[in-house]
Length: 118
Image (cartoon, rainbow, N blue to C red; front, side, top):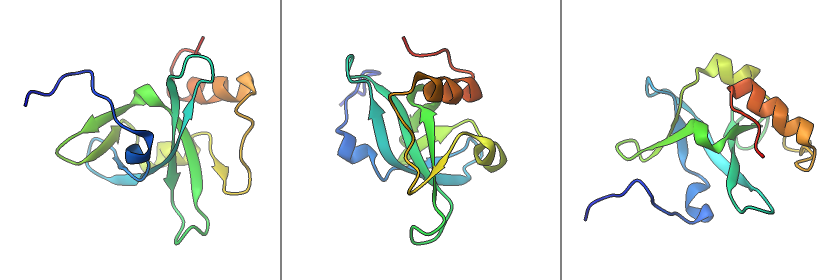
């Protein structure tokens, strides 16, 4: 079966998928997705990073289009180092951001060099 560039996957299958950088270093895994209420498009993947058994874990929202699925790895690749990821916008388990605040989305997109969502 030939793979097309337009494929679909259930969100529940994306959650838990590992994330790597181009050198193959494991960065974390997809914890959740943020979807636009009006257009239904995935805006951000929230990657869990660091911590142990959920303690000290941080959540890093990254624009969905910064991730590329790599079938050989069975996960997503993002062009970042661990150091760049540590400096990226993030939050803790008990500090969920206000996703309705456009300024928060702009801050994320600015960090990743992605134009704001319209």
